[in-house]
Length: 131
Length: 94
Image (cartoon, rainbow over all chains, first blue to last red):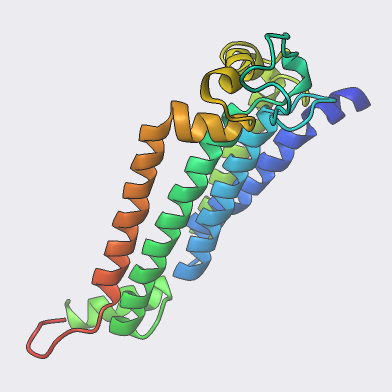
């Protein structure tokens, strides 16, 4: 039982993080809190992917002494963790930074026009003024 | 509304936790993610690209077009922020 928990608890932590982010995106009324929820969601996904690359007892995928001209000794695959999730999550981090920046710029525009970032207040103003 | 959001989040989480039963164990060297494509990269990347760091080799050599697309993403985001936040000249509508 304990072994089962140890082998799976990382996924449960990411699911809980994802639930926090999802609830913040749907349940909160403040736009900044929604944006923070989206960031938590993205962090959960990134952590999940990085954790799929882990191999127990392996080290970072940097090979020293295997370059050109060092012969063709066989590289033990189990000694180095999986590099591909790290690469893909670098791309995902860049995209998440870009979306966060654009979203914050949009929030600044919304605040300039309505002087509030609360969803229900903005909807009320739009209803009252007919815009 | 908040109750619906909470129920939806909890149901999604329950489904995903049910799904983790089929996931490979943490740190398993024979997990599907580590046993199909990545061994080839670990064995050949340094030889083919002369880069000891495999992450760098994949990012900037095998997937360099992807990285160029990333630069386009960041550039577009920056241009979007500038267009949205710049000071408006006189006579321009808001």
